[in-house]
Length: 391
Image (cartoon, rainbow, N blue to C red):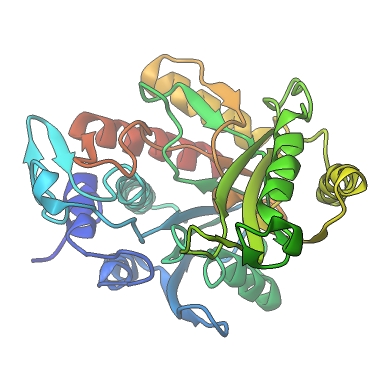
């Protein structure tokens, strides 16, 4: 059955029916290509690879070649549905019940992809009916790697675009941004994310002869206790306070009468603009050094993370989205930077970027669903924004 590109609900249903659990494409990108090509979009299917990670399919579709160039960034991959028996309707059936569309990805974020596609199709049709040329360009950057390692997705497609000399003037990421009602929040930045793995090596031995061994576990506990007790900052006008959380802890030991040779833990720090990543890494090392002075130990710390803190200052991109939200909902959307990371962390290095999408309370939940009325309202907001951005 041919899908109408202007029917956001039917398109969202079709996308939900693609079982595109990370990193599987499962037909979702092919569906989008089949919808976008007849509209005049030039489509590029890009399979990105890196040793030790799954190959990931991506889609970049653009119509127009001039400025301003508006890019919508999204992901068709979804998290696993969990126990399917717990769902009211099958997680990949796309059932509408009681005015709500059920399915994995309805909120995060196949619904937003469908809404933006329908809004774009409506804008193109309106321009054609008025006999005018479409000013500027519209593109969609869709990845299958946002819910996974985020290595072979948006970041690499952006590198590919830069190599081609393509310039984006503004980007929207369709992540669900609203806490309770559509039009509450527009995200204009995110805190950075830094992960540290702390490994302490001791000496294995029998628990009855501790003098002949060196237990790394108490040392690791002291390190973690010191890290968790420190207050990083109080936040600022743009960001909430930074926070540090222990996420993994353990010792590779199954026996209760053996002192383990190693203990390790991982921490994650979500940090605001009071910090840079190098300063934060130095702070972590300094805290560990304090414990080492009290309790000599063999410790190794390895840092990782793919997102630095960023902020899109209020300007044309932000004000036009605020105006579109106000016109369609009557609400003055707050400008926020809370929550986790998104692919906006990659896009911000190339152009101004904001995030605006559906209500986020049911993202990743059993019975993930979106009100059909919200889906159509989001389409209307996007449509108004596209029209003003390209005016």
